Length: 359
Image 1 (cartoon, rainbow, N blue to C red):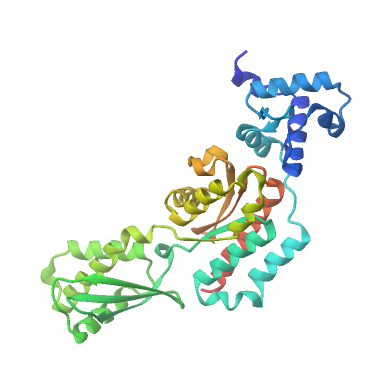
Image 2 (image 1 turned 45 degrees about the horizontal axis):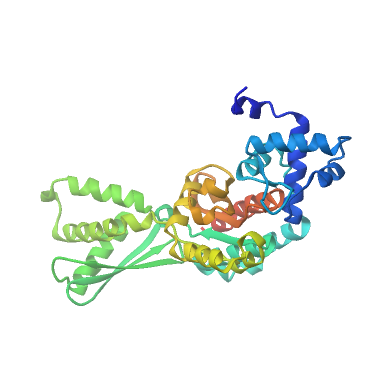
């Protein structure tokens, strides 16, 4: 019998013992021996029988034996089977649910609503507080927001400051380099034309419209239109790559210092560096952005060695018809999945509702 077929036929007794072992290790952080399993499993089995079952689970890759102990601990594969098959997700406990609703549904949110970044920082801190792990939230993608105003300000050496306003409060500034000097009057006429053309459209729609107008014969455009479309091309093509790049706010990293598996100074230093450098971690969040529902990356599943001892639980947030960002929690693979998963899911839904209420 192959290993794959044996996994498929993992019997009820083996599954029960694996669940007890994982729950015990998550709770206590100590390798689990056969005596503990005999006591906690509630099954009338001898220690010898349990040792045989553990040996089978180890051969299949669900558990491993640390060299310093006779007990066993779950592997990433064991955690994955536990999460996918054995986990009994609990409702968010009343205290955590009340705090999430208080932060995302009441007066506490009003100050944060002035900008998306403040709102996201509030939510990231909220996640870290209620889970005692690290919270991470990506900023809403500007590509999904509607433009309400475009303004140009003359700078030196043919450079122009572009002020883009999204929705009612979100402001982005960009500097573009033009081929010639434009007077303040020319810039004003160009901004008036672009505001008339593009107000209420997303960046994706604006880029599509610019390409369409550029493909038309320029003979039908007056000088104001030509100048405006030329500037818009600089603005939105210059920002095209950056607009799709996620930004995120992470809070509660210091909570990870109390986790035994992550507590070495060197490991924490490299983990915090990864958070600051962002590149690899952003790829993981971008994957979550394109997926549906709660995503769970356990240990090596993230594809990044620095996260081999971590699990990341994420969920997308946004409007019913579009996803604009991701919320998540970062912790050890030995995290309380049954508690963290519904907290992340609930927070994502309430954050989406809070953002939609701003529109």
